[in-house]
Image (cartoon, rainbow, N blue to C red; front, top):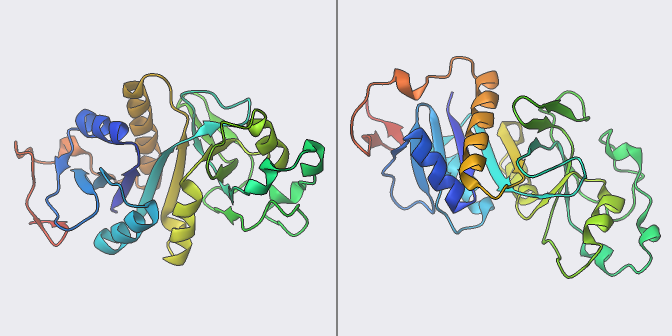
Length: 254
C-alpha cells in the first residue's frame, strides 16, 4: 500500500522530514515537495490551495490513503493544546452566525447531526460531510496516544473580532475543532471519488512545534499501522546514503 501525508504547516513539514530522515523525491512541475519514508510520501512546501494539491497527489501517486494535517482551534472545552483529533462530521462555516444579535436564536441544532441526518437541523447546518471510517459517530479517546477519534469539525475563517465567537460556534455546531481547510479537502475528495481514502487530521498546536511534529508522526504511524500491518519501515530498507532516490514517473526505480 502507498500512503501519503499532506502537511500544511511549513515548520511541521520541515520537522517531520528531519525526524524521519525522509528522502527527497525529485519530481518536476509539481506545486509541492515530496519526500519518501518507506511506502509513505510526505508532501508539503506548497502555497497552492489544498484542493489543487489533493487533485495533483491523487493523479500523480494514486495512493491508498491520504492524510491531511491541519492546525486547528479548540472549540470544545475538552480539547486542549497538543490534542490530535480525527473528526468524522464536517461543516462549512456560515458567517451569518456572526451578525445574529440574539445568541439564543442560534439554537435549534438537532441530535440528528450526530446520527448522520441533517434534515431537521437549523439552516446554518448545511452540506455536512460524514466520514464512515469509524463505525460509531461518538468520541473515542486513546489517551496513551494523545488521540481522539470522532467528533464534529467546522472549517472557515476564525473571527477574532467577535468576543463570543467560540461560544457561537459551540451553540450552532457543537463542534470540537475549527480550521480553514479540512472541509475543502473533503469536498475535493468527494469530487475525485476518493472519500474512502482520506483521513483529515485536526491537531491543536502547542507552543513547541518540535513536540507537535513528534506527536503527529507518532499518531500517523499508529493509524497507518492499523490500516496496513505489513507496512515496510524505513529501517528495513537498504540505506543508500544519498539525499535523493532514483525515481521514474513517480515510482522508485527497481
